[in-house]
Image (cartoon, rainbow, N blue to C red):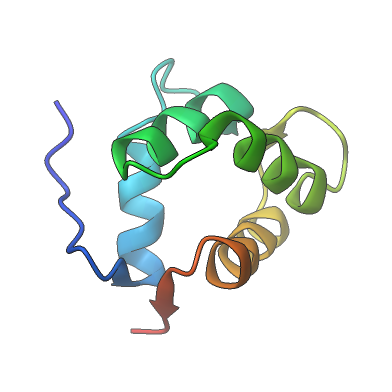
Length: 92
């Protein structure tokens, strides 16, 4: 069950963004895969979720592990979401 709800304007803090992503961590490994991010984007009804998730991984996954698994990669994912997904993500 995913109980973190985003408002239509997609505005949240960095901590809320991370908590929202954790709800899509289906295997509970603490990392976000491209498939999990795609599902998160589909949850927001973002068009072309598969393509955008692929682009996000290309942009944020520095070590090419196929997952977002470090604080640095999460920062890059936040920046990607702000710039390319038009999400308002701000420091708390």
